[in-house]
Structure formats: structure tokens, C-alpha cells
Length: 354
Image (cartoon, rainbow, N blue to C red; front, side, top):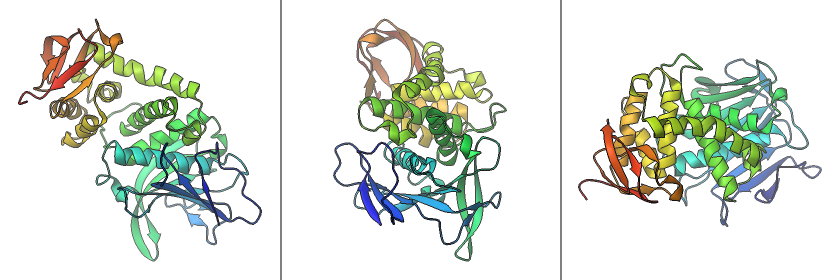
């Protein structure tokens, strides 16, 4: 078995002859000790894996491991099963790498460690069969003679899975379903919104990470900076801008998925990540309306600020709860959100008790 660091590699390439597997340390920028690692297996498994939904056979597997806290042992987080191997740019290699980056954000940004179903362990099946697209479900499988719950994602018609941005988007979408708090009851484009929200949040963070040099396009299936930027500009910013300009559309939050997505994406743009994560935790109703209110509650728990020179003179809606706000002249309030004109490059929200 070979061990390698991946930070300098664009994608995992063909191994030396006779290499059956490779252990890969997945470093963050500036780190010397990895909290994330991959096991890339080149040989077929001794016993093929039978997927729980379709009973298809998968002969290859990669695995991702991560620590929830420094000093913890590396725990198994993902198994990525596939039915073939490519000598270069194998989608299973890119998929396990991207999933570990998303898992890391769930733990360290969204504080979802204890909330992740099946302990944060998921299986992804890259399948020849099915209609092109993805699916996620909770089901069970026989493991070591026992029935075990399993959080399963599928990518179907994997040989058509060739556009890097679409590959990254689909993986982010299905992992959103697998791991983010579920808000549902919608009719279009699907019942549950956490998949659509996942791809928008994760690809926004991917854009920021690539721009800052923290991560690389290889961490996101090779999607180029330009393609991720275009995705954010067309699929993320318009939804957030609509809420910043007009406020949450309260009557439509539980009926129109875009209304909910807009609130979440506006909150993600304004709030520090700690308060954004708290908004999910505070939403006990698990509804879109409840989330809009929990954003305001989270915004009033601790001091925070946002802004730049570009904000000055704009009139926007900001979640404030009962907190005080400076750097903005408030004209009206609605259900914990405040509307007014930004007068300073730094707008500060401070809990009223402080």
C-alpha cells in the first residue's frame, strides 16, 4: 500500500504497478497533520458490494476518514462504491475527496456532528444503471450478519457524469439531502429543500475557498473557478438578493422552495458562520417559516457585523431579532427582521442586554 499527500496533486493518477491501494492525507492549507484522509483502492474487492435499493453489484470501493475533534481517531465517514475504474480522473476518487471536504464543513462550520444521521456515515454508489441524476434515502443493509441502518446516495448513469460543475453540483445536492436539516412539504422541484440548499451553500463556500487559495478545483470534481463563479452568480445571488431587497416572503416560505432558499442564502451571506449554524439548531418546528424566525433569533444571541463600502447607501433587510443595530437607519421591522438604509461600511448588531 502506498501513502501520499494530495495537496499538490490535481487528481489521483494511476498508481505504480502492483499497488493495490493508496492512503491519502487530505490537508487544509497550512496544516502539517491531516484530520481527513482517503483510502483509494485500485483492485477489485474480494466480495462485491450489493447495493441495498437495486441489488446491483459494485466491485470497487474508496473510503473517507475524518476526525470530529483534534486528537480523536480517524473514523470512517464514507464508502464510495463503483462498478469500474479509470486510470486517470476516476469519478470515485474525486467524489470521496469532495465528500470529505463537505463533511468537514458540516462538522467545523455548521456544528452538525451530533445531528448527522447514522453518525455521519454515508455510502455513495456510482452506478451504470438508472436515469441520469441522483437520489438519497435512508434504508438498511445486512452487515456482518446484522441489519444496519444506512444513509445511501446514488449517482445514476455514471458514464454520462462528465461535466465537472455538474458532478460537483450533484454530489453537493445529494449530500445536502443526506446531512442538512430537512425542511419539506414542497411540490416543485422536489419535496425536500435540503438538497437544493446543500448545493448552493457548499458551492458558495467552494468558490470562496478556491478564490482564497484554501482549497483547489480538484477538491470539487475539477470544476473550474469560472464555472463555480457562474453557478453562484446565477443560482445563489439572485435568491439572496431578493430577500435582502424585499425581506422574507412569509406567506410563501412553506409553499415556494425559492422563498425558503432565499432566506437561508441571505442569512448565509450576512451572518457569521456560528450564527448561521445556530439558526438551523434553533428551528425546532423544522419548517421554512420557523427557520426564518430562527435566523432572527440566532442573530440576536451574540454581537456580529457585516458590510463594506459597497453596502453604503443601499436599503436592505437584516435579521436582528430584538438586538440593536448601528450603521444602518431602520425604517421598519417584521418578525425579527429590520429594513433600512446602510449608512456606514460596517453594520453592527448587538444583543439588547449588552
